[in-house]
Picture 1: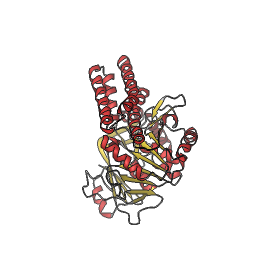
Picture 2: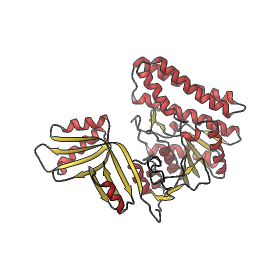
Picture 3: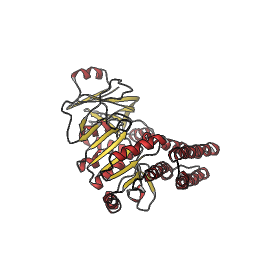
Length: 417
């Protein structure tokens, strides 16, 4: 069986959804589970709507809700020659739900993480309802599934952790029989729920991860992620116009790329499919015949350098005030504070008396620094970038000249500027 994931760009309008249906039809000989993201940039729109409400901007929030409603209703009107009224009736409850949540935010002037998950989840619920209805309208045996009934998580709202034992049991019991019967299952990316059925999300851009969860639990033959690019490139084409497509790469190479900032797939995607040795294909929904990139246990026979730039970084230079050695005991205390503050660490380098950390910049970074100031001196350089070169060549070392921090590890080169 196959698991396919379609992102927001692939379902942004009626023509795009028709294209998705054509792609699905080409693979209909296999049992299919389809994971779909919110249409276009609707997750961002729902976020903005909620923040308007939090700031007491009632008029702006109501206008934004009307825009979101119009956007989806326009897709339905363009997509269905007949039967559109029934689809509009199916999505109307989601708009009423959004309206209730917005009124609650306006009243309390609060937008806590639990409320965030409740409102942004509506984007996926809306898009999948429309996609499933369209597949049914063209004669496909299709069943809409609420991912919140299947993917169970803890209560870490906005970045929930999957409870794998419950999730696997739910998917095997509720989804496997549908697929064996030849039914196409359509479900949402990015969302789950606690054991008390409170809606959670798995982190922004988490639909790839959702697809990997289903692929793992269903022992899928293959997982496909459909995007508007030819596959995984060896550099950001906005920075390197002549970037080269990578035909195949190993799970380890894919993890390295996502961890250090490549945004083609979600960083958590690889582990679930690696555990079951399920290949991942990154394909282009604009050209189905394009080979794309295959991620498996096979590496590229002729590896080429890959260039990844991670923006929004801060470089921290930490020394103990009494000039103590930077030994294991001191570093243990520092890393405890790092964990408690919730700072994302990307690169580390230590010497006899100092420790250098390259971390994601943000409010939590200052919280981390404040925890250290009683015992340590901390120098912070803001707005730096972390450059990663996989399969680097000798000529790449020249670009690292003058960097604030440089590391080499096997075929990997890291530097901060």
